Length: 140
Image (cartoon, rainbow, N blue to C red):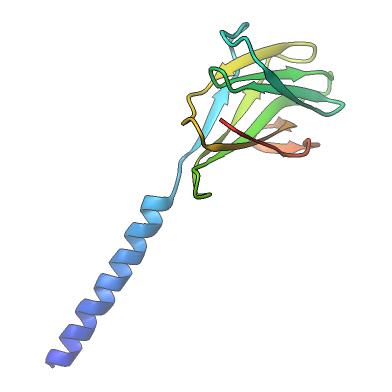
């Protein structure tokens, strides 16, 4: 009887530990809308674009610029991920520019200095994205 109790306690401890470590490592994905009409960053800006959309990132102040270049009923979207120096994903999200074709907006984020930022620009509708650029990775 005692062996069964010990085995049960060990199994419960292992299960709880696995659950808690999974929950602790989970991140919440951030969804933002680019609404600012200007930024306080003087650059330099790193640019990405497709035929439909364009985006830029300025590490000085952590600003994104997002532009919709085509009247197609889709929005311009930046998808991004932030990893710490050991490569662990710590934050991620998307920035939507919903003003329409021919318009652009800015969004300010606050990233931890020295972390790796990976991002791309896409067009999207709802939660669905397509026609994305290649990924760009840089230090925040």
